[in-house]
Each structure stands twice: as structure tokens, then as C-alpha cells.
Length: 103
Image (cartoon, rainbow, N blue to C red; front, side, top):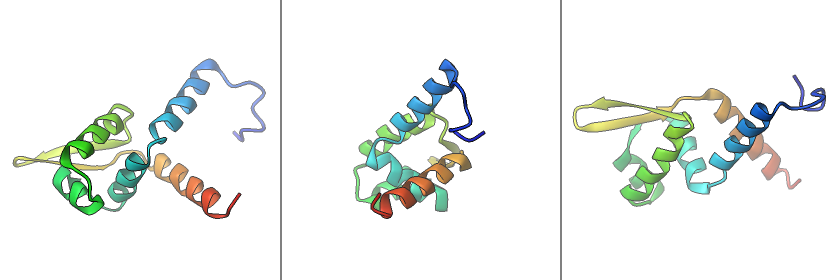
């Protein structure tokens, strides 16, 4: 359904849309999602790649996990993270196109 075809958004849908944009409202979370869309990474790899502290990465991953945008699995002592929602990556791609056109 196109946003302009919707007569009225239900309160549940409005809340989910609002929470999605809230979760994506932090540049660090966007950078992490962009990296995880390409490859599975451990916290230290994310921190090194994005030049962030491991605690900052862990904090942002906690939020991304809460929204189910990322998943993780244990491999030995490491937790490996990857993107868990292709629609979120599509939304980020659209946002990038929108922002990069100067609109």
C-alpha cells in the first residue's frame, strides 16, 4: 500500500513507523547497520572499522537488537552480528537517495 493511498494509519502502524525512525535517528546506528548489511562482524571489528569504542558499539547494538534490526550468534567467545531486516536496509537506501539528491 502506498502511503498516499492509506486513508488513515492505524495507531499501531503509526507507532511502529515512529519507533523505526527513532531507532534510525542516530548516525552511529546507521553506520553500524550499513556495515552489518555487508558482512557479519564482532563488536571489536565494528569498533575498529568505524573508529568507535567497543562500549559505544555495544550500546548501539543493544538498541538495534531491541528493534530486531540486527541478530547475533556466538562463535567461541565472540558474538557475531549481522543485519536481520532487509527492509530496514531498503529504507536506509531510500533515505540515502533522498538525502544525496539535495531535496
